[in-house]
Image (cartoon, rainbow, N blue to C red):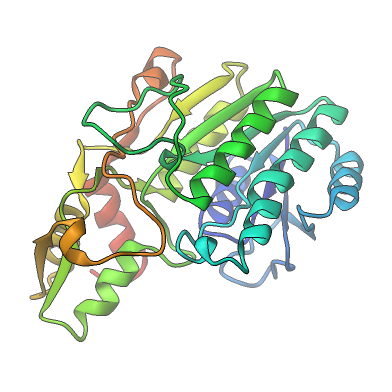
Length: 303
């Protein structure tokens, strides 16, 4: 199987490339800048190319030349607060919405399948019930969520053979994430205020990458939700477990979002994602987030 991965130098993309190599598939990774093979993000035996997903002609040319069996579209603008800045909004739209449309167009022309990585932010984050993967109750609260939804709609409009996989609270070895932020702050702070009224579940990128490659070998297309197992927690509870497992004396202090202070982008309170559809379609659900966190801390040398 020939797999093209966009955003191959990013937090998720690099782990998808590693899993592609582990399974012996042919992998082609693309990113805006070249991913050096000798870098932490580069995987031996894989091919890396530059591709600007906001350049329609380039996207069509690259995908037509490669003719992959499936494209795993990880490239995205994920800086949620920065997306709200007026000077960035056109760029966010170009990457998350138009860029995804260009990829889907090229995928359609070559007859490939596509996996599009989306987010809980396509919903309004209200209530306490977990969001179902086939729910169409879209009401994004911010620019990031709106543009990721536009990407979803482009994929579902143009393609029949697609997976739309919504994830949340992502952490992995490459790039910035909540775990790294908490560990960094714990070096200089004895207490850290963390919101306790935003509820969801973390997603560890190596575990997610395995699921995506499982999906790539099937025709069980559709909408899915994929986070680690272990129940729904708050950011405060996640931080407390990070400090506990890392052996840090830093204490997490629970605060409500209203007490924490306003951020540029509104955040969903309810990021609970229903993952039953994975098992119903024969996919193995991700391991417990606590186990994933411990494995991650060992990988980055925090244990």
